Image (cartoon, rainbow, N blue to C red; front, top):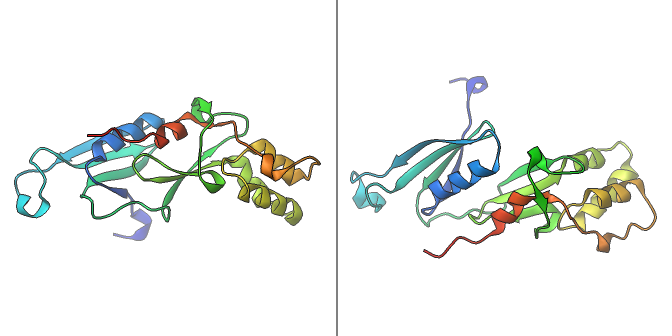
Length: 189
């Protein structure tokens, strides 16, 4: 197959939560769906150790991007070395999602309840950081590095060099509601 016809699919390795995670993610993103559930059979049980009928693979699409959730066991864990980026516009929620206050890691990063890392980034940030005016871009960069939750108003004030922009006082008040949902712990089983 030539590389220009190659279709990529991202595979998430889970320890028993593939179908649950797929259901959660498709509930969050528009134009998303679970496309296939494959279950373990008794064949190969001596190697895989899973009960027949339990979920092996949950295939799903998030806004046209293909993913597979594989219940492979506890051998591998997610790390922030791989993350997903969700951009949102200035002044409000993404795709009409409700917004609310949330806790996050440095520069708009979070880890969801399944261990997957996400970056929640206002689209205006890229414009500011790639500005041909290096001084403005540098001010926005410094402001971003001091924020956990990225605040468009604070970033814009720093970018424009407005007086009274105190980096330590910047707090976000608008990020997607699903950001909160991703932080909720899994129930005890």
